[in-house]
Image (cartoon, rainbow, N blue to C red; front, side, top):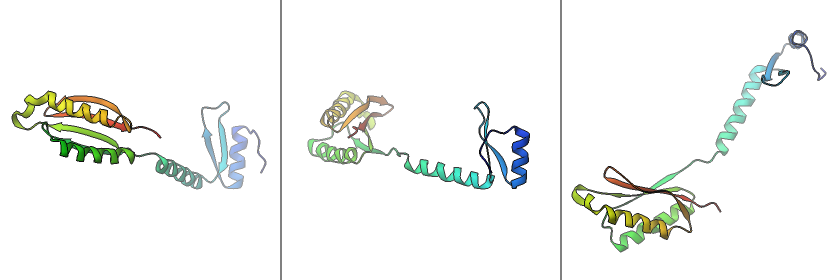
Length: 147
């Protein structure tokens, strides 16, 4: 079989003669590009290609670190160490301060804590979202810097 440009009736006749299918590859091209091949095999190859592309796509992992509004120094350092580990592994970090009961009056302390964490981690990651109060949680996102 020779490769060339055929009219639609001739291409269909050729496909029938070879007992194969006429598959439209790119319908938007002028003239539309078609191939004579086995359609089931074509679908299988396409699925295989899509699966390979999907497996190569990066998956975003989000790790969380929870603070209280009055987290003491040792706990802060311990959680900061975990945050450093998460960012070096390439995961996004969601740091939040959870306010229980009446501790919501310490909003400023929570914000200071999160901003301090962002400042301590600025060489490893960049702040994606500044501290934002949502209900009883103040949340901040930090994404790892590319190497």
